[in-house]
Length: 103
Image (cartoon, rainbow, N blue to C red; front, side):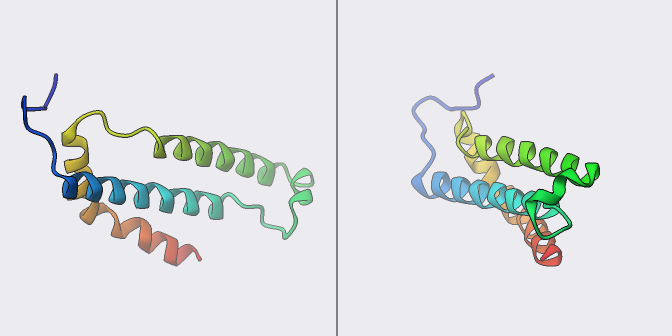
């Protein structure tokens, strides 16, 4: 099902705003995931001492990689940019708050 009206394109403002909000949202999620999945001890070589740290770092790396790939998979239709723009102002404060609390 296509939501595109023939001959009508999304404006540059909506395209750029939706893309910016989406990129900021995913970047904040990557930062939160990287911070939460970091090992509890100071150096990376301590991962082999505790299996739970190793599992957390591996899962965090996989999730960060998956989110990074999704940065480059853009919405397929114009309604996707509009949705990101409108809902972004509602959902964007939550990851910002979580990032501030975690740090």
